[in-house]
Image (cartoon, rainbow, N blue to C red; front, side, top):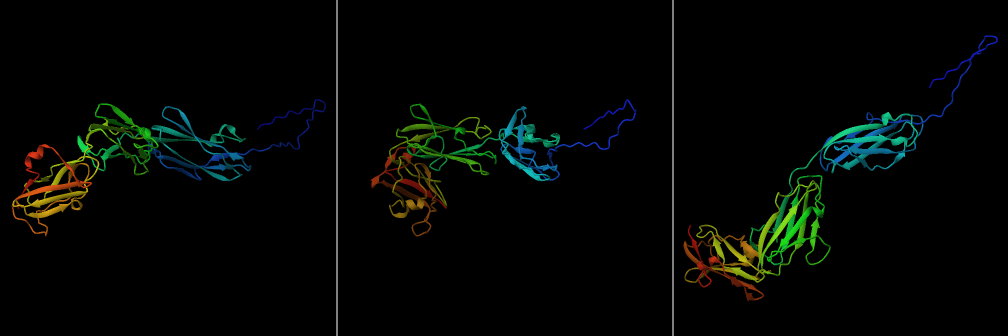
Length: 385
C-alpha cells in the first residue's frame, strides 16, 4: 500500500504539516500448506491398484479464523486429463491452528506417470491474502500389470484329460488366480463360459440368480487374489461335449492367448469296464484301474484275489479302495501281494474278479479293448519278488 499527499499554501507559503496520518482496514485470513509440520506420501512408484496415500499439514498463519475449508485433490494423468478425487469440506481452520489433510484412493485406471494436484481454498472459496502457498504438485508412477492370471478347471474335484468320461451331473469348478495383490477378481463380466453339445451347437452360460443350472460366483479377497465359479450342469444326452472358458483380470490380461478347451464324454447308463492292475507283473505294489459311467457310485465294490486253483487269498472292499468317482479311476489303495492275514504270497500267477452293485443290481460291464485279457470275468496278475 502506498499513499501520496500534496499540500500547498500560495498565500503565506507555509504548507501545513501532518501530525498524524492513520489508515484503518479489516484484515483477512491466510492459510498455507506446511509440509515441514507434517508430510507423508506412501509411495511415488506403485503397482496398478495399489493405494495412493497422502497426508499434508495446512496451517492458518494469520490471526483470523477461516470458515469451513474446501480442499481440492485432482489427478493429472499421462494423457493430460484431470480426474477429481472426491474430498469432503473440512472443519473451520481457526487462527494459528493446523489441519492434517489426508486422502487415499486406488491407482486403478491411472497407468503411467501422473501428478496429484493439491489446492487449498480453490477458486478463492473464501477471502484470503495469497494463494501461491496453497498449491502442490506431486508426481507418482503406476506400473502396468502385464502378467496373465492362471485358470484352473476341475470336474467333481478332478483335473480330467481331454476326452475323459465324466458324470452326467458334474460339479464344474473354475478358478482364476491373479498375482496382483491390489486388483481383486470380483467382476463376473471378466469370464466367458461356453458348452458345446454333441449336436455341434454351442451355448453360453450366464450368471443367474436361480434355477437348476445356477452359476455361483465367489469373488476374490485380497491379498490372495483367487476367484471361483461353481455350477452343476445336467447332460441328459449321451455324447461328447466341450467346455470352453476364458478369464481376464482387472488389467484385461487374458488367462491364455487361446481359450481353455476340454472335451469330455457323458454316458448316462451305469457301467464299469474290466478292472486292470498296474503295474502287471509287479513285485511289491500294484494299483487298480477302471472306468465308471452313469451318475451313481456302486454301493458294493469288491475285488476278490485267488490262486489258480480258486482259493480266495484276499478280498479288497470299497472302503479300502479310497475315493471312487465317475470316470477314469486309479485306486488310492495299493496291494502289496499279501493275503488276508498280512502274510506274503508266493511268486506266480493269480486270478482276480470284481463284484459291483447299485441298488442291489449288478453294474453292467462296458466293453473295451482290454476285454481280450479277461476270460469269463477273471483277470490275471503276476507276482514276482
